[in-house]
Amino acid sequence: MRPHRSLLTAAAASCLLLVTACGSADPAGSGKSGGLNPPDLKAPTALGAPEGEVNLIAWAGYVEDGSNDPKVDWVSDFEKRTGCRVNAKTAATSDEMVSLMKTGAYDAVSASGDASLRLIASGDAAPVNTALVPHYADVFAGLKNKEWNSVKGVAYGVPHGRGANLLMYDTEKVKPAPDSWSAVFDKASAHSGKVTAYDSPIYLADAALYLKATKPELGIENPYALDQKQFDASVALLKEQNKHIGEYWSDYLKEISAFKSGDSVVGTSWQVIANLAKAEGAKIEAVLPKEGSTGWSDTWMVSAKAKHPVCAYKWLDWIVSPKTNAQVAEYFGEAPANAKSCVETADKNHCAVFHATDETYWKRVHFWTTPIEQCLDGRKDVRCVPYAKWVQAWTEIKG
Image (cartoon, rainbow, N blue to C red; front, side, top):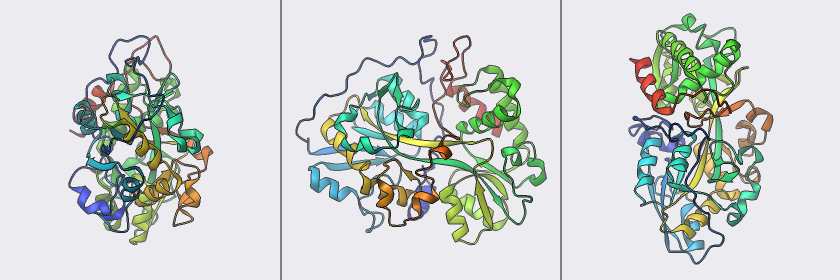
């Protein structure tokens, strides 16, 4: 996903994309007219004694024990306090996480929005009894009971953090300062060959969000709920944009380098990238365009086959506790999920920079959610295009 600077070099070689898919199957069981109907699994009503260990699947930077940086360690204290030894597997993609969870060898996973519904629908993730996660009470309301982490009011995990996809531009070469995604779509020709975009099938949602604002006749309500006509329009927009793309980026070391060298002057980015690029001398700014943006929110989910469920629940509570969640947010470069974390950050401006407490800001962000055939916008009269088709289309767009 989006690791801190100290993880970048090691992680770049392993494809850090949060949603780079490798041919995912339809996540929701096509043809279920009633929507997403996961298996009838029950959350525990109480916790017993810890089992002594917990097996986790996580994005790079989410489970730090000091081995990457001696100063960055929130695992050791967890192990001492709970008696649960942490065994962590770093995954490079959401598809890898889904595959690993299916083995039954892992107790919990830091699932992103493009994987969570797949895990719920397949029965690989179990409902979570949030009453057994005391610090869940302090999670921002804007992250609870959302379409990517719950079904019909039942929580399937604990929110970890969030971030928005921003429009970044070279302040000396892109004038006037853009405030719209038109800079990378309808006006991309102005900087042809120096436009950059996020290398992932989920980027189709960015095109859909732009069309929602500029082509209201398409009737797009949710950029992750596209019927065939809406989907085709989004694909066509990205194929047109492809003519002007200099590079699709998949790790942000390369994006920073491209903006510093002038090879890229405008494109999709993250706040943490903008911060790092500026620190390295790039003449850039990053904005949330007037159309809004897509974004990401990760959720710690418990395996339905967890062999160490008590330790898994203790990890969920630990990772969302104020101090730990603050540590992760700063190291990783994201807004924390716990509302009390902002007073725990070393950089007292961190939450302001990442808009942690600004719910008005987050209402403009459409968080990544797995596209399924049952339209997520509530329509019953049409089928929407599932994620597997997004993956196929992305290959065609880039080709």
